[in-house]
Amino acid sequence: MAETKPLNRGFGRVLVFIYGVFALSASARAGVQIGTKFHEAPLAYSLSALAALVYIVATVALARSSAASRRVALAAVGFELVGVLAVGTVSLLDAGAFPDATVWSDFGQGYGYVPLVLPFVGLFWLWRTSRREPVAEATAPRD
Amino acid sequence: MIGPLAVATHVLSLALAAWAFVEFFRQREPSRALFAGVWGVEALVLVQVVVLAVKLAGGQHPAGGDLVTLIGYLLTAALLPPAGIVLARMEPTKWGSLLIGAAAVIVPVLILRLGQIWNG
Image 1 (spheres, helix red, strand yellow):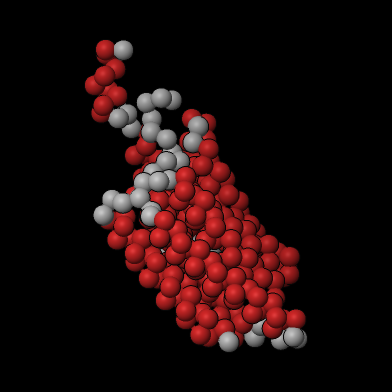
Image 2 (cartoon, rainbow over the protein chains, first blue to last red; image 1 turned 90 degrees about the vertical axis):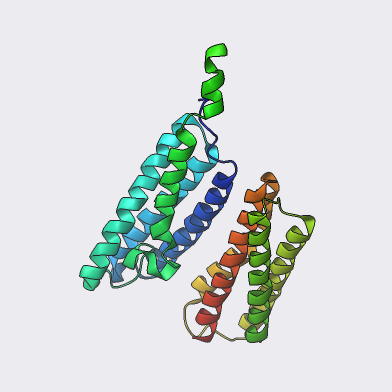
């Protein structure tokens, strides 16, 4: 789609980096939890793995920046938003459901609330880059 | 031994982050000096890796967490600055400066967690 701005340039490159860091740290955390003590809290650790997967998909989709990966990124970032809100709410209401922390517990408090802010920034960037540029619109009739 | 080294990493990395953010707000692409600063942070992190490897080889153990988590944080901290450099080189705009600033903020967080895992 020539009229949309690339997802992975400018601020998008910063976003790919941040998502990459979260993909790595969430995967490492899930790996350790599942590898060493899965039976202690199967639900929390499964959610850790799910969160890690979502961050990996979002990172790759944002970095690839094709029309198809834009839809994948939207789905992943949207899922991330729902995930952090749902897990954050449940972990506060019913602490017993999550005996050990996931990235999304307490709205990502353990990660400086970045997991809560990140999907909003991601959605904003997807929206911002999907708009046609005013210059392109102005020159379109002449083409 | 992890103490002074961690403090040095925090100071250098956060100073670098402040500098990178100033460059970003002045609409400047990352300079060679800024990249050199990231390599400086990386050097300190690598010294940390060696120090902890020697301590582990000497029979010491992390007091506040398991060994796998410690190694995970060490690897992440060591890989983060080079990854930031690669991406910032691909982005020779003000956004490259912001990216280096972000990397330089994350490294102290990782070193902080590393200290918590090691010292308990």
